[in-house]
Length: 290
Image (tube, rainbow, N blue to C red; front, side, top):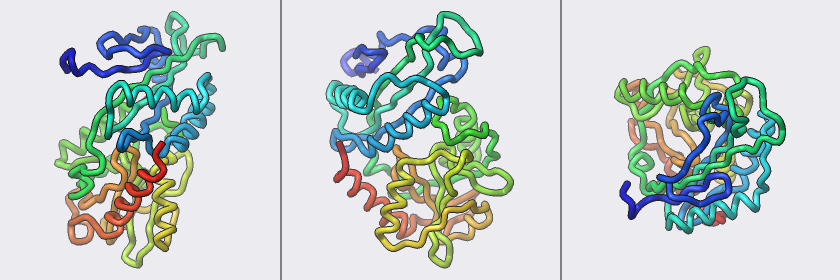
């Protein structure tokens, strides 16, 4: 990225050019993955599902006993200022919060007066007209070897990255993680299927999966469309026999899954229900945007 297109980022109270942004080498996010994050999508320069993302940020921080000295209003102002400074029309704003630096490495939490580190940056990306949304994606299953508190949105994303790379090596676009023969979720999204008898199934909330903000909105939209919803675990075999499969996330909305481990889902094309839910989600997101 050249000097004329340098993004402005936010670091601990300052808006700076990305080339000038620094964080201590003793920051616990760097040393111990001691931090949480959120991703809010942007359409037409406005934030999507922002209250939900900030609610989950507070839950994640509380689960780690991590101080969050900024309220939702202050964080909204920072998000909006970054969008303005970077002239972001469509894409995402990433927020990362760590426990900060106490000046050296130690497993124990530092004193309460240690200032947390807050970093935000924008990322331009086509969301509404993404090719994956139109054509669907192929997923490959990978063992779920993550820790047991997947409901906390921490910055420790090494294994999801490994799973995505393994899926890419298998010729797929993304990974679905599997534990004891059951799909937990995608490497960075929630997994769904539509059974042959018309039930829309996604795994129930628990420490095994991330409580997706997009998942919650899609649940509301599915109910409004009179779809029958079942919150339960499902197997890889059941998903392969499904009428449709798809994933949901802040950065991909509703994205059809057209194959699992090279086995076509349905007729191997994006399904009608996934297309309807994607269109409904985009429409509702624009209506609710801040």
